[in-house]
Length: 326
Image (cartoon, rainbow, N blue to C red; front, side, top):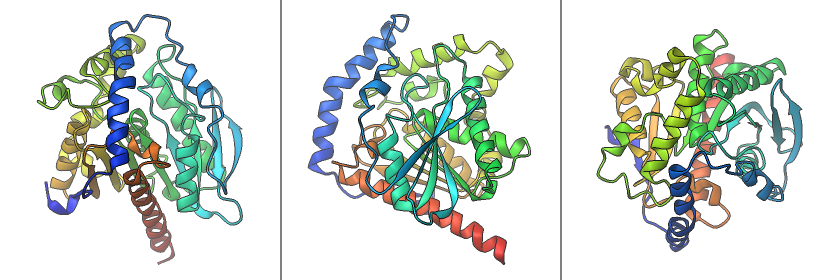
């Protein structure tokens, strides 16, 4: 992989080290238990309820937009927002999370970029299939376009499972004739839903949050929920795409912790895209937990990462503006 494609954050803060220890001691056992007993009536809604009072950062305003089967929340900085829009797709293993759980993270990106963001509460497992989730996200993209924002002035950003959706939605939009978005940003994305390759890596058990069994169970739940066998096969299209196909993705920035279990996905995608001269970059953050950017209130590396993600978004929205006026 070319050195210019990969950037590594220098050092680790004390705060991030403490967060890693706490997460490994608390959250990881819960995920391991879920992986063992996925049919237990888990309260998947609890995260949204628990985060209901988590405020957006100061200086933004919010409004709710109804979609056909779900909702999305618009967040903007007020005054005269920068041209364009961000479609934000949250993570949560396609099972948990939503607008409330990611509100502070999204609002921080909005405040930094000055670009309005639209966070989607797409339908999720176990009651809905992956095709349903992708359909909701595509409808959200179309609604933003219908509001007057050109598709080439939209950045799609997602974390974890939302990173997967960001790639799939951008690819589906271009292939379906909607058009090519300005750029994509992924934080700790899962790219290959089949965990087989990742579990072969010797570091697969080093992740402080995600146990290997959780990936195996998630893939099984996705397979059970998807009635269309051919569509199920297509859900791995990013992971199985050729170098040339990956190089045709919109400009892409991936940020990931150095020893996350999902890192092999990012390494493979970036290496293949870069080999065909794709516009892609990978940022590695030593020792950081999965989607550490959500801890920007406490973790300095998270603030650096979000600022760099904001630069990626703004740079490509402005670059597109210059191309159209040339």
